[in-house]
Image 1: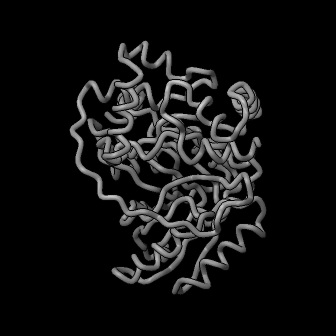
Image 2 (image 1 turned 90 degrees about the horizontal axis):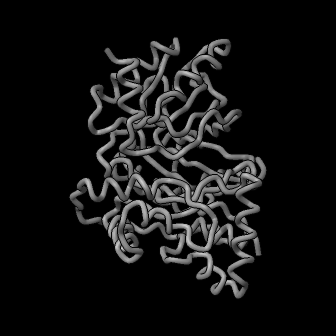
Image 3 (image 1 turned 135 degrees about the vertical axis):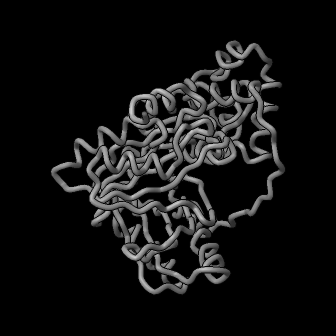
Length: 333
């Protein structure tokens, strides 16, 4: 039952006054049982966070995947500097000359561009080389670890055309609250609506509007991969054709359920891979099997599985907070 509950809260979290009661009804168990199971999984660090997951770009932030080449003896010091930036949410060591991989987001009111910030970080960390890998085409972003071992191997990835949404201070206040980790209690949203001084209906209505317009990808729980038993997570880079053919290939790769992220990114003279697929497996054999199955269905010249040897940072970005301004005031004169 635990595995079914964990899978359920990753897919979509009920936006109702008592969400765990709704999950309990779906699974024919009691609300108390659901809460007790999830509280235990939170204590065991299986559940990393339960919150709104926002679209960085739609909030006005610019972002990119970045790879640094850092001398081994400089890694520890470099990581401290990189992790101090509030826009770096993910930071890993991977098995390549480009050994430090991180995602960086820059606030809409930043005094620096993304590229200039990366230049500053490269100088501060003594990076020997780096590449900037922005998203050229997004096919999929949805982390759902199959805790049940019953999910289909393939899934349909829906293409959604979102209508625009003009955000104002009212929305920003809700975003600031909804991005925070909720408590596992009967009414986990109670304190949020009290702080915002709005009703449950109003709060859920705005979150649903965020989702309909793409501002919020979904409200869900994110699991700690390794603690949940998924220790073989590989970022697999593929050298494929560009243009229309590349987009067709990307859609096929994204259809594999074990692929949580799938993007087209630019190539460089020192980096000839443009399709990125993030694959989650319990063992290297599981992950390798997914890689081989994708390889059977797509046209590619070569691929490179990059396993993360160390996780330095994995958090959700805190949007519209002072930390961005504080960091820039310290490092950008």
